[in-house]
Image (cartoon, rainbow, N blue to C red; front, top):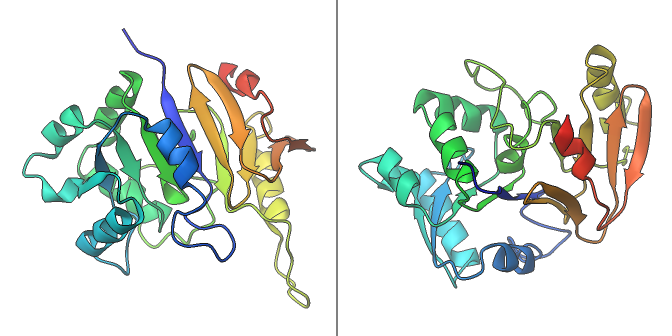
Length: 236
């Protein structure tokens, strides 16, 4: 029997000029109350080694013992014994490709379905959705599929921004998402701004942080307010 999922989907590792994971610490601490050991999945790191990435996260989370999944001789056993699963940002395609390569998608889903807390940011949040088709990243590798963990039955767009640089003639983020919605009109896309997060707890979904989010559905676009109950999006 599945336990209620406990999933914290952070938009980013930084907010503004703050230190690495500084803005996220209160949310992480609340989400991981009474937990000391964290299993970190660094596969989104491309230009940084997985060891260095793990060390960076350990430095940012000194109150926890952080160990990379790649540092265990048996990754499946490491997942089964994990008190919490933490998945960092970087390149979403590389992250998902490595999870497929090591046959880890189903084991992660199983652990989270059994109640193991999950925290991700950026790419680590992207893979919580139905697929990674609304990531901002370049497809530097080709995963076997774009299908992801599907903890939430919709698409995510971390780092969402309305900003358009003066003189830049490329599509805005909203225009890119509108392209997706044109071809997938029944699949919602939730954009979360840097410094915010979606929290899934016992099938209740809400937005945390200080900035409003955006949801795209078909041709419609609407604002998501902080603390707003988004649980209806879990019923799709």
